[in-house]
Length: 269
Image (cartoon, rainbow, N blue to C red; front, side):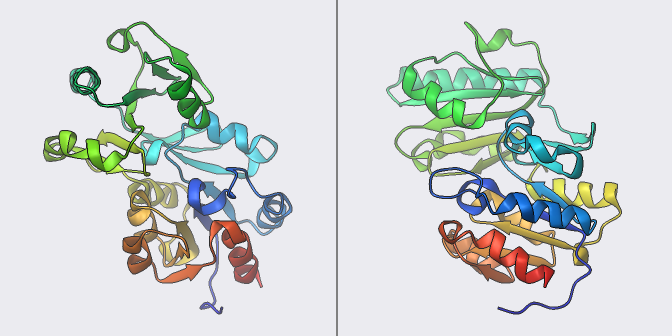
């Protein structure tokens, strides 16, 4: 596997199905690699649907050298400060809460995470749904009424225990004004129009003074398409969705083979 020579300065990496191994863990080989990247002035940016607090927890020992694209691009952070955040209009967020409640009342096995800037919030608190939410949200509050949450709402994440494709049609009309992204087999994310990982990466590039040509990006699923578009060195994982494989300029081994790590090592030479 060979790549054109690049003055690499920024690497953006999706988490699930891309960086994380089959057990959902960060591979141990990443930690010394992050030290190498920092020594060469290359910033590493996890780019995920997960909240900022969850990403920071996963990389707690390397925060000084990292930047973050959280909430599928709705929250971008460099150092101690925000690069950007995109909050939903409260009345719209409330309408989605009511819609998901109606789906659940109609028999759909769905739950909703209201993703705020300070915390994430759920009102469905059974063990099965709580376990799924806990995987992605380090700060997670159970509340009696999601409509009473007092926070800037960055994203609404709908979880369908069966298949997100089954619930997506019920949210299709929201696409006229907002982003509705199937971000995994079970998850659908609703965000402001124009919010995605690619726009977030472009904002991060501008904040850091980095070009597309100096950027590498890795992804595996549909919510990574724009992320790959924003980097000249774009890599689809071997296990990626067919649309992602078609969109990326290069292919990396699967996450089960630690493809992100082996590819970055080749890029470093």
